[in-house]
Image 1: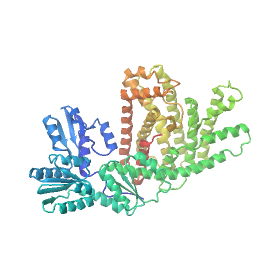
Image 2: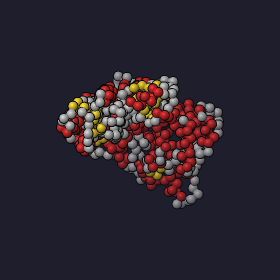
Image 3: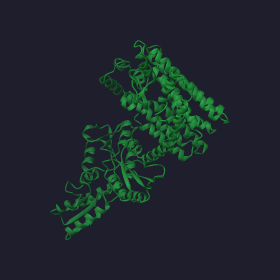
Image 4: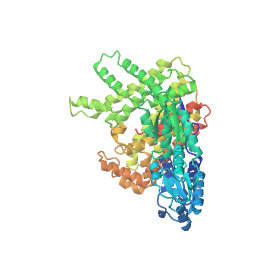
Length: 632
């Protein structure tokens, strides 16, 4: 069971500051946030995508800009500088912090000594110090109280709004005793929201096996929240959802029966908690279906080899079986997920259909390896390479033709056997006709996409009547990747359950295209070790959204790009040069923005699909998040 704490994540002040910054994105002026708006790299990244930059030096900005003062607040001198230089600003200081500033300013003008209980380096404390003319004293530990030598007759004790309240009470009482002969006013300015977050987390932790605390690594309130949770159960802090997912996949003792609590510090946006929860739900669902498919495919592979008495066939079939394993089973998973989603049952009736698709996928990959001259697939030697190596011992002059011919035959074998599996398993099913129709449509669209994918590079390279590379590239994405990897498998599972919803398929098309853009980015910016295959997109002259952008929109970069694109031998320096061209031309930014928008739009469309239950919407959301964060 996965539960999000009732009160968690960004407080009203932090949320308002972020919302204010985003609301200014469409202004004609350049927008800056003075200093880091939150201890949250995801929010900073999203702001950058909107051309909103967090800066540390006001002197670098011009008068035609807008500056956002973050929720932590700023010293008086910051406002004086902005007003003196005629720079427009929007003040998003949290109302609780602003009240601290008012009290400090008032008491300082009345001749009070000011003591602030809090962390000396915390931005809120530094801002508050700026309202007492530099004469304030910060108390972070007992030693700081010992070091106070003399104070004025009137003393104000106030605190950082997110500091530990127990320490605030303890320190204030010690100060009162030490200076008992003086007039001391104590203002407990601890934020009620922070107290509520900690209380809610503590209550949840008491009933959880583990707690996941989300927030910035350097956020004081998040670290304090982690300490609160640790008192009641094993607790972990994560600031990066990718790191979290890597950790989750290695936990053998965490499963759907584990009581998992999720909370977050004031730096974490509400939607991020849902992303973590949905990702966990997806992973549990994926792990269960994948296990069923792995067991089934292992059995299928054993039977696939039965009854063979010819040495050539034994060797060939064993090579197919070698490749027909160790995949990620994403497509098989989507078939199972869609079947369970619309059939309302968690049986294993979908498994043969998933295995048929996995076998079909192996055939596609074998043919792909021939087309791409690939040496490695799924971390293993490809079938064409196996045959070349096998017969090179006999005759070193044997060319690729023999190896490719044998590989083609094995690829064809998988196609036909996948149909046999469907027929054997579902011949009595009332939906058999629809299953064959959908399966055939997936194969047809995949081949159509592959045809464009194979011929477009040569037409593009030699400028053969191709003016709009992006349009042709998007056709590949839709026909090949979206249909083969996302839409097709999901539609098969839906068809097996006797359902068909066009709005679901429409939503999935965006997911499929974004999935391929992510692949393109990984193909340029990841190592071969991470991707598990040889031959880069650069060597293959692959027509990606990155290349299309340079060709169609920034031709001034094309001549330099063509020095490297399509080279059979690439050095590390060559790869770096291509990466730099894509970055400087804006191609990478263009691809990333398109990908993010497609993922975001797909999640928005998913919200409106009434045919999908909320729990399955969560799982699908988690699946989309997984595609967003994957690194291979």
